[in-house]
Length: 165
Image (cartoon, rainbow, N blue to C red; front, side, top):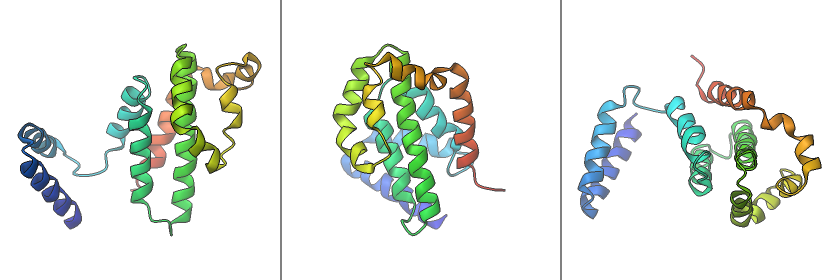
């Protein structure tokens, strides 16, 4: 908790130094409203599934997921591996959402931006490159296009992310 306060002070100091007074006020307001004073899974899931994915913001989505990976020490291999799988699933869901929405341009933009990195990760992304073009591939992943999958996926993500009480 001490580290959190220190980090908050650094953010305040930066905002004051740069003259971002409006941002500082918004930061202070959000800190005061932060009842849990910490990691709020619901807000993060809302950000992912209600903003970044529906509004087609892959840069912000990838940035958030990368931040989570930075928070986990590489010595915690089980957590890191699980987070990597979760990241791959969320990114695949982004693609599915774009195709369902008829936004093949966003799929192309996604692969232009992340394609090389995804292939290097080795998470078997190759079939996804054909998604916007091949209807036969779409039928093989049609279960991902069902509306209920989003709710189940969000519930799973929430349960995975919440610490054991």
